[in-house]
Length: 308
Image (cartoon, rainbow, N blue to C red; front, side, top):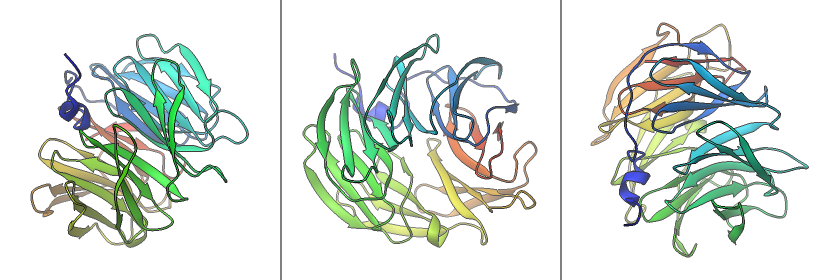
């Protein structure tokens, strides 16, 4: 039996854990992923990826020596790390069970990444190689490269298709995962950056207008654009099974960032949370573990992970 692609798209193909703790990690904590038991955090400036046991908050391992680790994906056995690294490899593979480094791959300046049940898809912003690459998880071999846009950021999977955000051109591209065919390009004002998929619709952060935009996954129709609290820059986004959560920083260590909860059905703001205990001024990456939200506080170079 093949993988349940809908479950993979919703990041619900592993068990959930419950705990609550805030711990220090490397400088510039940002990209995050949950592997069913552990939270993984990429620390951009520190050049490290930290593995945290979700049940206890214990740091189980730290993988060092990476060059500007950015975003993370989990393929069921391994953690894939994009790196904004030039010259040098832009992609790393870490075994999830013991945090052993399994290899690095020359794929250019890699930013966003997503797993489709078989392959990882990686956005590349290196000059002359702009596009998204389809990478075989077994050995890191690039089985296909698809030139789209220039200033690519987030990548996500909706159960059948890959979505890629072109921040510079205000475009979101939808590609068929089976063969990389472009199924549509959609204008999304505000510098589209990161995605969450709610099972039916695609949600995209748009930092330059301090909003999040909701697109119908079937045809790319914009269903709504929803503002966050004024004065903050949208960062991370995740879906908790009912609602969309968006982090926003303020670009200053002296003022609090915020976390906004939107009802997925209609975009209504359920709450905006400022200066929560143990949440620093610069919430960035955010991930849902099935029960709790984990937030990387690294948008201003901070170095911790918190839980709402």
